[in-house]
Length: 369
Ligand code: NAD
Ligand code: GLY
Image 1 (cartoon, rainbow, N blue to C red):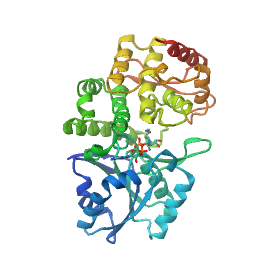
Image 2 (image 1 turned 135 degrees about the vertical axis):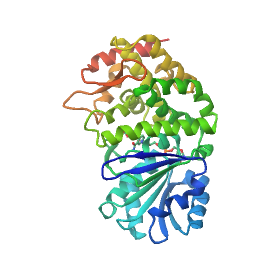
Image 3 (image 1 turned 60 degrees about the vertical axis):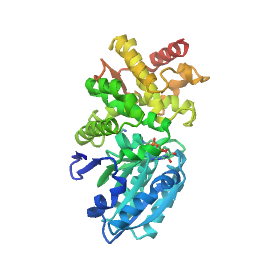
Image 4 (image 1 turned 180 degrees about the vertical axis):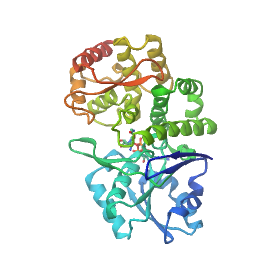
């Protein structure tokens, strides 16, 4: 089993990674659960695949579980379901020293974590991430949120879990498209500051996506270790370090907004294409060589994700896409910091990006054959 410590000052915890952890959840959770019962929040698809396994394992460890099963999908990260989750946790007598469980992808983790940050002014929570995206990114680092009319993730809190159990076997029931989308976040860690890991992805990505157990576990452990290092150094994203985790997100978010945050483009697919665009824009700025940028594009395409905006078939031009960027929550005094690259594994935060130039770049990308 890989155990990655997340050394957040005052709230350290471990991420445990091993095939079969959901079936052994009871013994791992036991030290964090008081009074022989626990509240579990999940969604209907995850419940269909994993509730029996997790509830059985908890029971075998002497822990009875109560379940709140929410609808699957991004729209569950809402005021309505947040209120429902808080009320449900209170009805079940959750106290401040209790830990509630989030079993699911980033939607369930973000919603449950936010509810846990508020119930009794903050109770414990355990993340059991069941998507690749949640295992390598959203379950670690304590960002929790819901979506509102004004945009995605605009209301939330930093609230760290007490334990994260990442079971690669959970991915056996995940639709392949969701696994590919989560893989974008794995590739991201290579591009941020680990060229060797990017090369590992090029060599092993297809095995990982085909379900190879060793490749999955290695990728999750490397990704979590990278994220743990960054969030331990900059928990609240005040030092410019945690911002590196947003590589590909500014372009990706604009594309997600333009496609209506729908199945046309999953979040991870937007990040994948966003990383390709960040690389190509870095070439335009004379920062990165074209060969490296096309290496990024080739790997994203080989992993079965979109590597060109034209392929999305959108009816939008560059200025319409950059208009979405103005609503980005990273906007700082009228300027938008951008993650650019000097090479593979050499991402940095640029504060001198002119959105009109980005719009011209996107027009050129839209015309690219
Ligand atoms: P998700 O939670 O919606 O899960 C994707 C789909 O897979 C859902 O339909 C879900 O029901 C299903 N599913 C999940 N696990 C399954 C399994 N093992 N078997 C079968 N079906 C399964 O999506 P996601 O990609 O995990 O998360 C996206 C969310 O994460 C977004 O809301 C995003 O904002 C958030 N996010 C948060 C952070 C953070 O740091 N907190 C980081 C990245 C993304
Ligand atoms: N996923 C970005 C972050 O956790 O900061």
